[in-house]
Image 1 (spheres, each protein chain N blue to C red):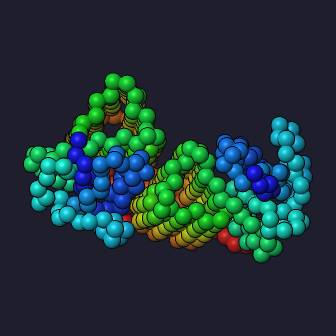
Image 2 (cartoon, chains in turn red, yellow):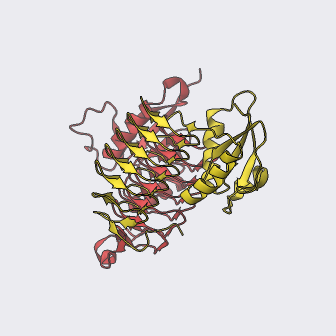
Image 3 (tube, chains in turn red, blue):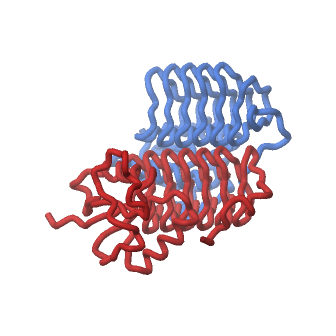
Length: 225
Length: 215
């Protein structure tokens, strides 16, 4: 058996620790890689947690040879997209994974750096953009499109033909009705129902979802530091 | 058991059902014969699967086995019933990742999506559609043609009439009765009985003129 490639998890927060557990659910004989550690800007992020793997360094300080894989385990869509694109330019090679319990249609496409968590269901023709994370028990419909760097929280529903832009955040139990267009950087709150068109950068909350008018001033603008 | 599977419906849900069926593996003699046009058109389905005519006009043949691939209850109750009345037989599809447990009675032509969970002593009428991750509690009775959206939760002893639509993520509290042809908007929590033909929406769900629709 050939030597396994090194895999590093970018981000050692809560999502990073979850991703480590999900990778361990994949049987060793089915992996061409082995998780060797985390890349995180805070070296003490794992202190107090029972995690056997080390934090090697800041992902921006790591030298990417192209032989190793990285998985992106950052929840905040804004910072994630900028960081991942920088790492990509520096030669990082992003892997994608879905948990063995996820049901991903053979005709669905997961971009590089995507993660689909436990019991996620992804329909035929769906496209999940690079660096997106789809959390537990979410259902994604036929021909739905998820933009790059989007975070879809647990138990969300993205209906058939809906399209989420880049860097979108869906809270848990968010409901995106079929055919809805959600603009780049929009935020949909927990258990919020949206349909029609959600403008880029907007924050929606409630049933039915209403735009929070002061969101532009209180939330970090998409794509800026 | 018929060996020529026919999807009743041509929308994106029909494509999803086909995907689940093919993934589960057809038995040796089975093949996909085609679909019946329901007005909706999924581009992939119409390009790759044979159209056998419209839902209303098709005359069942000896080896046909139909799969209810419609979401809209009115269409299910007219088209699927018409096919059945002409002698057509329907497949009841239970995805391997669906938990339909003991003493559950499923009507003909039901489709249970992956992640759906049915506990015990449940009765589903014919052509009931249960979407991903929906949970159905004990002693629940669901009328023919109902559609239970993704992530819905029906507590114990709930009654749903014929042709009820629960949009995604609806919670129905114990012992609540929802009358025939009601629509419940996405994300609602239904706390009291709903009269037949009413649309309700919200937390708690209240009568509305129209619930949210897909674009």
